[in-house]
Image (cartoon, rainbow, N blue to C red; front, side, top):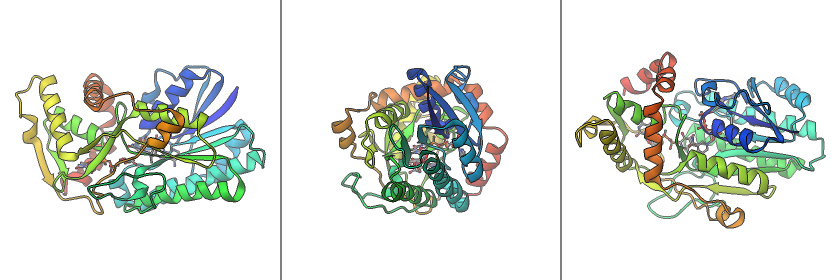
Length: 350
Ligand code: NAD
Ligand code: DAU
């Protein structure tokens, strides 16, 4: 058995990665280390929690001595690092929390891997999951490539950029066998409903206002989360040490166009008259430092490692809406308590 550590496995993308690895690789023992912040939810993993090759560990990557002990105890051969504070709006409200988890937490993991592996890197891998937001904002033309200079604008993207730099520095300075990927916006099941797609699905379902930032003209490149998890599998196993791979769906949408598609699909699924949900659209104050456009060139990953997205967006968004409508209990559990306080502070005062 190879012991593999996945951090942030109770979150949105992490839970899809844990599920894929536990089911596909019976020869790996997957340890899921997660602090269970508001974004972490063990209900995301109910279907695999009893598998013999899976163990959940509740813990904080900011606690360096705890992380060291964990590595010493389980002697991980691989690390797939997803744990992070991930929401841009929250980073504007509380930047330091993002520095702690995203930068300090990442350096703690790198230090623990360095200590445990102690120069013996055969069969070892430290895979850091990052975001396209580190590249900043595009104008109307062009795509982010692996060579695009970093230019983060939000405390979230600055903290992810910082962590990426540390990961690469530990490769160059200490020889840690790292690989990094930078992915575009994900959508799909189990995403916490503070992010655009699940938030708007939930609000449409409850006939609540749809808070569109600015004029709704910002553009994002959307990828189905299970395609991201497949890319992580391919890069973990076949990516070249020291390299970076961009992951994206070649699927750009202006926010307002995407929102109108969601409204139309949901009107149909909920038996509402056409145009009913669009009336919920409410333009609100723009996000500070709001990046205009993200778009990823993932040709390196496609050419060198043979990955490509499996789902067209039209099919993916239908599947995603169906999932949230069929999983009302999951949605109501995560939208009670703290969520309501967050919602008040984020939207009611706007
Ligand atoms: P998420 O917020 O849904 O999940 C993050 C997980 O990390 C949660 O389970 C949380 O409990 C855990 N966590 C947070 N702080 C922790 C700490 N100090 N110690 C241990 N665990 C902690 O995030 P996500 O959307 O699934 O993103 C996962 C990773 O992928 C992040 O690194 C993010 O930057 C990156 N990413 C996300 C997207 C996207 O569209 N969501 C796109 C590209 C890259
Ligand atoms: O690009 C990858 C990134 O995508 C990840 O690194 C982040 O973790 C992830 O949160 C996501 O960041 P965004 O800021 O692009 O995602 P979000 O869902 O917050 O917003 C998508 C777009 O929708 C963005 O232009 C802001 C807008 N928006 C968002 C919310 C929550 C609104 O107009 N209204 C809203 O209420």
